Image (tube, rainbow, N blue to C red; front, side):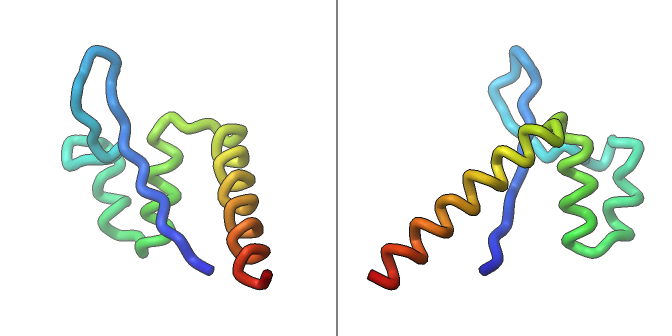
Length: 74
């Protein structure tokens, strides 16, 4: 099973969300040179999500997948 995680950030006091790395970001040129998976990892690194939070998110996703697989086989 594959899924796509899209990360958008919002600055305090702002009402809009945007990608963590845009054309004005110093690492934008690296993003354009990477494949889609590595570009996503680079965006996660610059989004402000901690490794601990990311592990928690992935554990939640794995739990949801397991629940879906269990209900599908029942």
